[in-house]
Amino acid sequence: MADLRPVTLWTPKVRQEERTDGTILVWQEDPLGPYPRCLSDRIDHWAKETPGRTWMAERDGGDWRQVSFGALADLLDRVGGVLLDLGLSVDRPLLILSGNGIDHAIAALAAQHVGIPSAAIAPAYSLSGAPWPKLADIAGQITPGAVFAADLAPFAPAIEAVIDPDVPILTAGGDLTGRRVLPWAEVMAAEPSAAARDAAAKVTPDTIAKFLFTSGTTGSPKAVIQTQRMLCANMEQVLDCYAFMRDEPPVFVDWAPWNHTASGNKVFNMALYNGGTYHVDHGRPTPEGMKETIRNLREVAPTWYFNVPVGFEALVGAMEEDPDFAATFFSRLRILMYAGAGLPEHLWQRLEALSVQAVGARTLLTTGLGATETAPFAMMCTEEQTGPGNIGVPGRDVTIKLVPTGDKLEARIKGPNVTPGYWRNPELTAAAFDDEGYYKFGDALRFAVPWDASKGFYFDGRIAENFKLTSGTWVAVGALRAALVDALGGLARDAVIAGENRDELGALIVPARKAAEALVEDGTAMDDATLWAQPQVREALADRLSAFAAKATGSSTRVTRALVLTDPLDLNAGEVTDKGSVNQRAVLRQRPQVVEALYSDSPDVIRARRTARA
Image 1 (cartoon, helix red, strand yellow):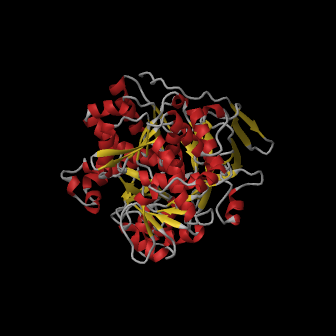
Image 2 (cartoon, one colour; image 1 turned 90 degrees about the vertical axis):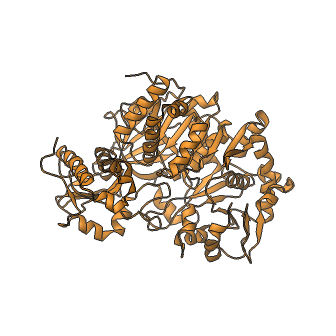
Image 3 (cartoon, helix red, strand yellow; image 1 turned 90 degrees about the horizontal axis):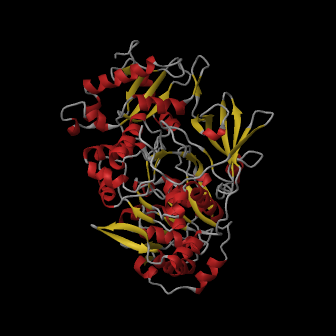
């Protein structure tokens, strides 16, 4: 096996303690280093140290529009002063409807700078069509004082229907009759504000920096409070882990939405905190969207890169076809991180092979565990692994509490990066924490090496997702989903496990087209229903499902039947989050007729044979 590419990372000294009731505590021995009172302090630092260094770049046609740290620092007082003049406050925050972009970033940071929270909302909530239920719910929770939309036209119908007519709108383009609209160019050109400087000086670690909404897959979206302490402590925890960034300002090419914590907090703030450069990637992990991502990555080689497995699948295919692209991508890469779903074994192996071909060594592949409520960095695996899945150990000043729950260990967390709660919802806040103040992830973990926390942990399913068969046997849904997707060898992007109060397990397959298209002549020209009905595709699924069932250790891991979901998952119904992950419970709840069909004699059902073919 090729050597691992050298990279400077942490050397965590992990400790563990077991209580008499079986509860286990895990933490790092060394304390967290000092961190600033607010993120603006880091912006000010880099504006003085390297004012001309590019902080953010975004494509403007074919070229990159760039903003330096010096320019960003200058804009904070200008834009922040305008927001204060509009009467914005913690009770009347800035609502951001647009997707990722430089102007969006400036608006959010200027608000933070003067103590005004912002809330970036998944654009789909405003573009999904009437009656825009999630947007209306969000607006009711936070009562916005102003709305930012870089391009007003697509959002105008939702704004008119949902947002109070007295709320002003900031936009880089467009108008809306009967509304107060402030052109963004004029906002950025405002005179530097003494009021903004005074307000910025009063920001404390407990000041609310933003609200991040969970995806609403278990009901209404929840406004998770993000304080300056959370964000700054989390960045120092991240920097302790990715220690190479102390000497090497990071370079990012990132598509993930800022309304979600993975990018909106972690990647976005890593550039600010470490004097790095963030390239806004307007691609997406879809067949069409990946064209833009690949275009950007051909021009800009990242030093740290994140994607979800379906995005890596497309990248791997493109790099295998074009070694020059692979050489550029890996040229200065220190770490690859996957999240959002389990990484299939075949993708892990192909990424390692590409890295070896490009630079003569394997690049560290890693993942971790976090949540919107933890800012999000909480646990990370940086120890060399032979395959995917290990989520690592807690960061500094983080304590993980593992509570026996049935035959599982439920994970809970305490640390300076943990939210104080949910905005204007004391009941939900109280329910989210235990009597010792630990936030309850709702996830189960298991030791990678029995009872040795220093070797990390594996995700062991969502506590709320698990269910029993009629035999009384518990099914660990999370681990089973990941294993099944891996066994289907690229034909599935995800799977939903059914079988609660039934005799056997079934799966609803969220399909991945590329592998299926390769099995059928002219497969790329077929619609989903036609493609997945092809005998070659069904036979391949049956073969792989049969092989998976043959290896099962019992009824709780044996999936005997499957249906392919050719109807798209519904964001508004909570079946899929804005970052593309699938919600098990929501899909089963929204599609009872499909579950019934799965357990019927329908010819559409793919069944595992009793003896798997070789």
